Image (cartoon, rainbow, N blue to C red):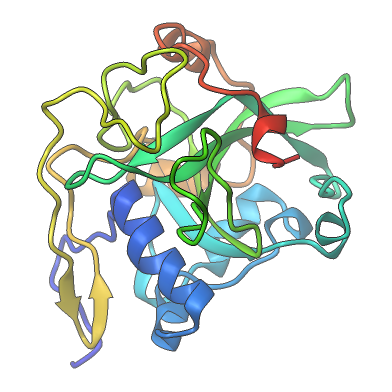
Length: 257
């Protein structure tokens, strides 16, 4: 069949591909067929364990990670803070924002925010293993000499996943950032992998699997499916993994509440 994929096919885009291809085309309105791969979903209007059922039809059956476009909330557009609460809990930002670099020019192309889902109400919520990376693109029309990147807030792309304790990296990341330097004009440490060409599948530009897996890896197969509706408290894996990274900038520097 024309729309069927061979066994083992996975949608594993890199962070660069998410920002420069999928999110860029979505904001520009140039590739409407991308909705079949990454749909528009109000993540905060759904419980995280319900999100796997809302993925694009090209990614049905995925058990490790799920991708969604999320438009800016109306209250956020008016200068307020977004509402990140659901019926059973809330999403809470963790850590410091991180830059995403292009592999070819070694330039900043976006910013990543990581969030964790808590059951209950703040500040007494119970931390779960559900996590989300939210990506926003850099406004390329800004003055490149600016020390703080200006973000495009009208649309973001999100990756929802479940932590399992594996240390597999989501994507390529520069080894260090010099404090006080301009990330827009300076490249990160050498040694980044070459960019990966996107593969065309059934008329949709689908990203191939990266040499380094982008998943934090969850429990796979039937075990994962059985646990989607009730994921327990997280261990301290995330804190251990982030302990080696230096904070880049605070959220307010990006005007990203």
